Length: 214
Image (cartoon, rainbow, N blue to C red):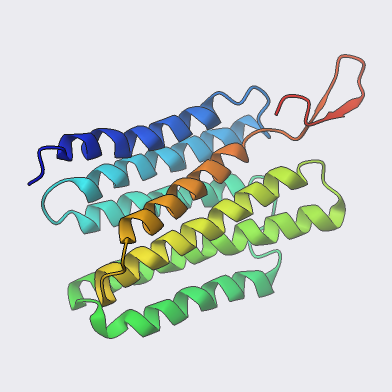
């Protein structure tokens, strides 16, 4: 009912658009394929932002938009790493999602249970794959290790943000919930967007320069 609600409607998606621009403007991306999928994932998140902020109960459409976003992020992460390359990390991520789901189960309405289960599964797979990719890169000394780590940090923050959102929605109101949910969410997208930037590039002389264009 606030006359300032228009400011929220303008600035919430604007923040995501600005983060999208960070990925779009990366001059030397890890790969064009990686950037395309990351851009698609952030764009889906933008659609989810709009659904969740508008009047009315658009939780399921918003959930679907973010689910598609996580599928895009998974597609990006699979471009240079095998799915489940580190099973323990994937299982740890799935276990975290399962524990949260079990604790909130009685508070989730029956019509929402299946959509939430599917969403948690996809989100956990995204987080586990991001962690596994970073570890694989570390073990083989990949030049893009820092980029992989940024993607992993973003994935973990996304899981944290969605956990806070779920507990606030289904269990009990969290004080200053918007601050915690949105700050972790925007940080997650920011780290993921910055993972598009290549860490090392070939100079004209053919040598490798680290962080030259960051």
